[in-house]
Length: 196
Image 1: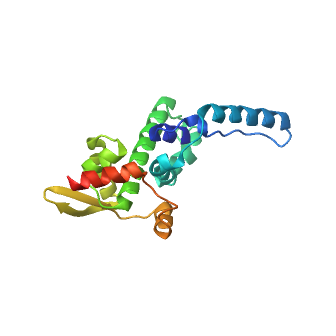
Image 2: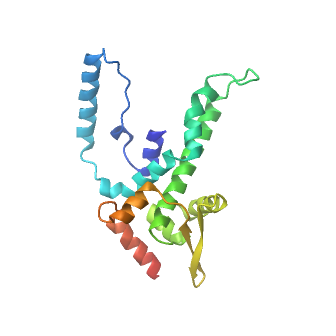
Image 3: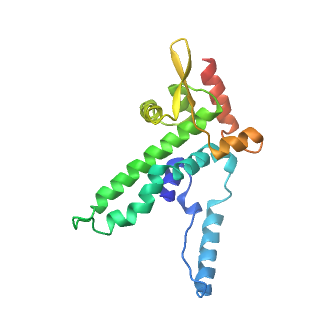
């Protein structure tokens, strides 16, 4: 699930590794450390400021009820039989997971943007790189979930705002310089989009 979210955010999935090693497997652990060190060296430094908004969206998506439930039930739904003695089709399960991960990430990305300031659908699309249709669709879902709402309008352009706060936004409010959610170029995009 994390690997898929990293893909959606445009971050190399190899930057996150999860390995299970027993305390009795010291040599195996040492091999994993060497392997991960080699991978990270090849990938180079990771500029967190460039991905601040996307990392906040990943964190929010991972905390969503839908993804937490699916991750907890994935094994049960795909490996074990239900009360009727049936197993879920693995391809169908993967399709449901992929759609859910994508949807929750998009909604989280939109909410992270809306916490900074009210934005129009086009502004959100420009900042996030998502198609206008996708932003509109996910914004509608957020409105139905009472997580976003119409805020104001400028001429015929509607602006929307978030109704929920994330831990990142609370920290950002405490100290804006330590927790910028948008990189400087995104702030410039917002200002350009708002001024047009």
